[in-house]
Image 1 (cartoon, rainbow, N blue to C red):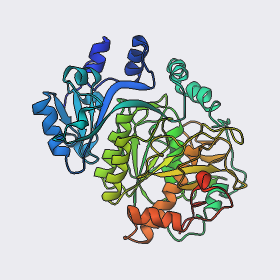
Image 2 (image 1 turned 90 degrees about the vertical axis):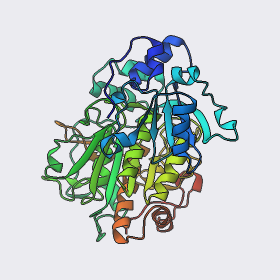
Image 3 (image 1 turned 180 degrees about the vertical axis):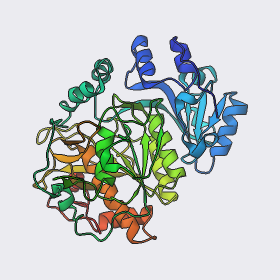
Image 4 (image 1 turned 30 degrees about the vertical axis):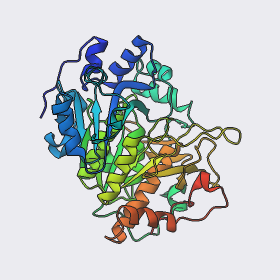
Length: 442
């Protein structure tokens, strides 16, 4: 395993290796006065079946110090532990991260793939990613506050209502689970691995006591969730059937095998490579369902398309949030990345009247799910919270997908995707807003 390096203070040092944190990368971008939506690093997507050749080319032809995710146990690679590596290869998805300074020094450009003998499909800039759509300026303000204040600041801007202490109205199930026909299902996700890639999870949450959880961080911080977003999404996808006390059931696949990947920091930020590292890890561990409630308002990315295709080829399925940037009925923003990739299932949000949520992005939407006033788990001491967003809709789909996967060993990858859309409840709404309709449990 590569050793952990001491972060360098200069912009050149930050860009040269790949161990820099999102905060360091953003500060470097601000200092240079460049595009602060981009980290300054690059993502190299290899042609199908050419990952080994691409890695060899980086080492021998380009002279880079290259690390491989397979050098880390279970491919759980934290970029903070990349040492002096100038590039990191994610072999399951055929993508490599290259430091910006190293790319410039060794002649790697966005036109690198043009060479006929190249193993590279494309070279693209790496972008920052967020749990909710925020501008770099908003994020920079947020990193100076506590995690709780960061969430309150950003949530109000993006349709994610952060209420105080929330008590369930009655014992039973949340409106979202009822709409998806979860309570009456005979399935519970037993034996199915579900990966939730987000801000981590409250590993000491009492309603998950005794529940086996496989967890890893990809952002240089402990998995413990100080933000809340990850604990909430994981709770919807995999939470308990009968939480103690007068509480509604809020978890869908309550017997699934939980895989928690912290790909966003406690301030809700991350980079594309950290998301890809989590996807690579989830695919390597053959998680049948991979839930991703994050993104950025950027065009479809070759690296995410490759990750989605690799997942399908391995019998896995990535489902991702369509985004919260709309202001309906006036403004409908396009689906964010990674959900806008054709190889990834994009999830739009509905309210309890089964109308499209005002904030839900549109265009490339494959399926819809409950995403308004969603009650789920939250880090201690609060334990529960009710918030809204396509981030909340996505784990409803992930949980239902796990139940379908449990129902038949043949429902994996593309077959699982087809089953989700074929069984969705049709809605009298544009497919660009709700796709095939409201997701349904088996």
